Image (cartoon, rainbow, N blue to C red; front, top):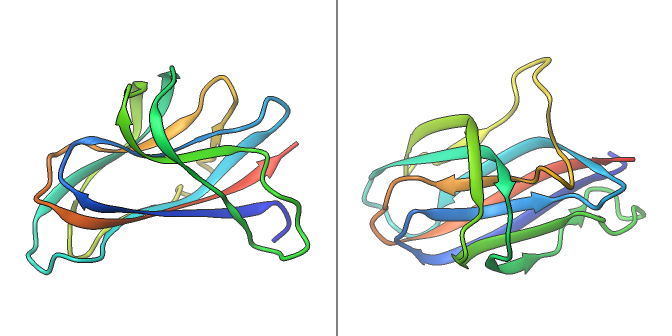
Amino acid sequence: MRGVYSATAKITGLSAAKTLIYIQPATDKLAELLYASVTNASNSTNQQFECTLARITSLGTPTATSVTPEPSETADQAAASTVKANVTASEPTYGAALSDEGASSIGGWYWEPAANRTVIATNGKPIGVRMISTPTSFDCCLTLVFREIG
């Protein structure tokens, strides 16, 4: 679908509560979030973890890894939004969670908006996925799918 992008990243040895991935749209765009997931690529021992999807009220300048979103259509232009993963310093400040759920590390955490519940990120209010609990070390796979509008 035109204007839809998938951003994926892997955090090796995740063992801390922190921002896993966030999106900041360009000033002239909005980003409609379509899907997000946090899954386990390494540890077969089940553990419970808690993830949230929340608006960022103050981004600051976090230290994180840049992620290049992949367009779902090969002829589509590059995404204008900035996506970063694995914040290691200068955590953003968050508002109330849009979703706060526990999940089994073997099954993973998956988020899709309910019907008629659109979640939009703007340049002034980026959105992030955070690990709230402190997990036992595992290799964490992240996916964030979004549509750019504008």
